[in-house]
Image 1 (cartoon, rainbow, N blue to C red):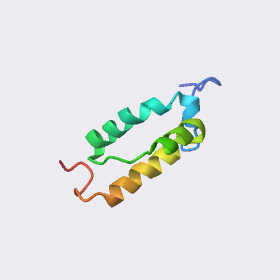
Image 2 (cartoon, one colour):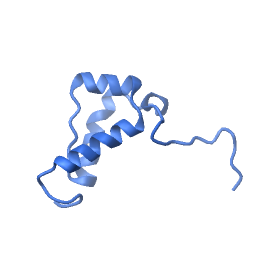
Image 3 (cartoon, one colour):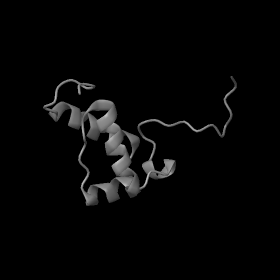
Image 4 (cartoon, helix red, strand yellow):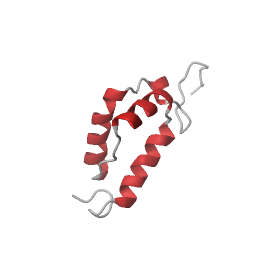
Length: 79
């Protein structure tokens, strides 16, 4: 398939604001992490605002990995 110049490519350096991720999306993101990985990454209000304005996909990934590492529940996916 031929790549078009307007094809959107998302990677770790993609800014959350560029994909329309706003502060109000954090609750849904935490719920998704809980359902998918059995962890709940913590984002206080200031962190939510900062990430929504200047954060990247990599920043969210790091928060999820930190939550997984600190989880006392067990392996990712355990319920």
